[in-house]
Image (cartoon, rainbow, N blue to C red; front, side):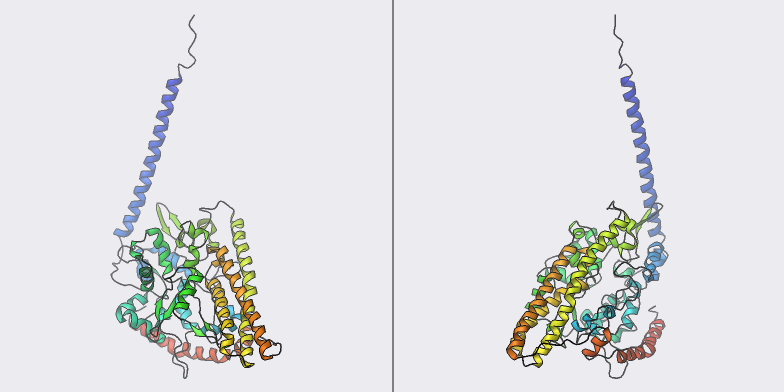
Amino acid sequence: MTKPNSNKYGPWIIGLAICAGTAIAVVILALLAASVTVRRAEVASIYNNRKVEIKGIQPKNEVFGQNYPREYETWKKTANMDFKSKHLGNMPQDVLAERPDMVILWAGYAFARDYSAPRGHFYSVADMLTTWRVGSPGVEDQKDLQTASCWTCKSPDVPRMMEQLGQEEFYKAPWSSLGAEIVNPIGCADCHEPQTMDLTITRPALKEAFQRIGRDVNQTTILEKRSLVCAQCHVEYYFKGDGKYVTFPWDKGFTVEAMEAYYDENDFSDWTHAVSKTPMIKAQHPDWELFQLGPHGQKKLSCADCHMPYISEGGLKYSDHHLVSPLSKVATACQVCHRDSEETLIKFVYERQDKLLETRNLLEPELAKAHILTKMAMEGGATDEELAPVRALIRQGQWRWDFAVASHGAPFHAPVETQRILAHGLEKALRAQILLKDVFSEHGIEEAVMPDISTKEKAQKYIGLDPKVLASQKAVFLETVAPKWLEEAKANGRI
């Protein structure tokens, strides 16, 4: 008797499964191909149906907006001032009023006059006009405090003026001499080549810094450029020589110690401290450098990945040009990679910020105290030779403090490295005070009574600034000189 074959339908079932699988795969591939085709068609439509042809340097953002309305509409949101996280936001915020020790730290330098939290790119020009750091041109006895170098990162009008004047002439021109020319806020032409919209480097300081370290910025990848267009401005820099030539101090490396060694080797200081007479370095905002040392930078992410997450509309994907803290858009900026809840991710960031700010809040008053004690030592007869090691420690300590706190987002970009930098700054500030105790003892100086610097006004008065006079001078400038600049810019078609 023949045994029935229980698997006689097996080959048929397997065949049907293969056919079904193949059919499904074909359908999926067809849908994918259709999606790609639609996406390519939409992209091609954008490029083929541009409303205006943009040639050369076009600083007006609204002109780009005619061709790229989606990106332009998101860029316009940089005018919003509605975001506030636990420690910062994008609205006006007087940092000196919140932390008056900083007035002492910057005594003799323009930052002691005014230091506000950064707002969006939309306000880059407006905030330059209202800050007290550049001076109040046009006011009797109040000249420019800065050269045109201070305009470098503030507007797409800058490459136009560099081309017109020449790079060196631009840098050393008085700040106010270009007030009617630098009028459009940071935008499209700062990062994009207008014909193709490819990312491009428009500021020569970055190209020059790369050349000095043996790299060609033109040979970098698209992924690298998604950070390097930011690194044109969000970096440490200084004004070199009498011509105030904008220079990035990267010749020895990107760390706080490497840049300090560069400055020391070149015997550079931004200013001499008005209280302690210490030759000081003012850190700008070494965001890109610290980002390289943090977890996201080491994993080769770009600035744009978090600050300009993609938006999808139909078959089109484009970057969100509303540059703001990723905490305001966790779903698109963070959860693309991280599977934690929004609440958990924000909690992680706040924990890092809290711990770093704890160290920062210990360091700032100790640095201020070191400056004031040095002044008392001078008044008690201490010589420059005796105070040289004290001033060296103050310079080193404040450079580390400033490097950490001036960097936007340092607690997120590189929390471990930033904590290390702040800790070293605190150690140097305390060592300076220990040396000062010996100086006090040597000269029989009585135990110091610290001045009351508990408010911005009291601290400014201590270093010889009168906020009422500064406000009056700025008001005259804003009521007389600034409106003339605006009228001239409109007459010349700049805006």
